[in-house]
Amino acid sequence: MSQSMMSVSSLNTKIKSLLEATFMHILVEGEVASVTYHTSGHIYFSIKDQQSSIKCVMWRSSVSKLKFRIEKGMHIVIEGSIGVYTPRGEYQFYAVHVEPYGKGALALAYEQLKERLKEKGYFDAQRKKPIPKHIRKIALVTAKESAALHDMLKIIEHRWPLLEVVIVDTLVQGDEAAAQIAHALHYADSLSVDVVVVGRGGGSAEDLWSFNEEMVADALFTMQTPVVSAVGHEVDVMISDFVADLRAPTPSAAMEMILPDMREILYTLNELVERFTYAMNQKLQHLVRELKHTEEILLRSSPSRQLKETQIEFIRLEEEFKRIMTYKLERFSSLLPEMYTKYRQNLVFILEQKNQYLEYMDKKLKMNDPKLQCRKGWAQISAEEKTIELSAIEVNQKFTVQDAETRIEALCLSKA
Image (tube, rainbow, N blue to C red):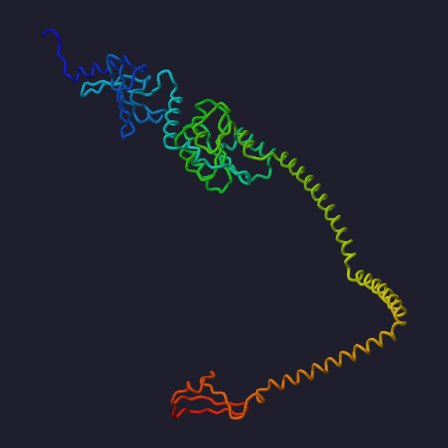
């Protein structure tokens, strides 16, 4: 044989050198045929097209930068290089970056997380807490040097300067922002405030991405204090907007939505004062009229006035009585002798009638006297307080014998 031989290891080494030198930093697109998330943090998957497939691996260091979750059937674009595992003569694609085909990674990650949280009930309307109508203390979770905080404080000063404000400083963009925001939300929830507002000003999707992280959504979901999400501009809709109890289009709008306008309150108070003053004046006028009426009634009904009126009436009646009596006496003075004679005659006649009736009643009384009616030798017989015939008495029976003057208790010894 003229050709030189080489070992399997040598061949695999040459192939490795050739492939890894040729296919560096390339892009490959295909459909995910299978995927495994290993406990180590690595992802093992394969992609395919209509004719073939290739195995891929993404190490944990690159996985930590992945914004979305690789799933079976997903059409993706992979950036990376070909590598060969020399001991087994196998090659695979080492992915360093993955993007959804035709769609940004952030957009896909947003949709995936949104769907997952929706299924867990994070967006349910019935679990959302009402924002208090009267807010005395508020926590603002944002960067302390940010324009968003400045805008919110300006609106607070303009609308409701009586508000007590607690500023909870946190990063609002960058790799560490999500963890800091979640921690700041938990801290704000422990401050016994009436409401928490979390947010930041506008920016790119990457700048605002911290508010689309699952750890921030978890922190919002577990809060006991009502929370308002105020992130970006009106067109920016974050995951935090869906989970929070209220979504505000901007940080400034959040303050306008939850705080009363001092000028409107003052205008309302002024209107209420005017209405109250008018009502009180009407009430006072009514009470004054009632008081005057009561005073008149009191004067008319006062004891001194009634006594005076009674005295006047008494004097009038007295004079009237004297006048009438004088008239009567004068009228009947001529009739007195005749009336005296008639009166005497009537009195004598009545006395004679009464004497005759008295004599009649005396005779009748004597006739009805029991002592006079009872003949000598006769008596009343009774037993057990009842009058009985003599023939009804039995031998050895006790009975009573009584006449007009004497009562005797007797015992029947024999009967014939």
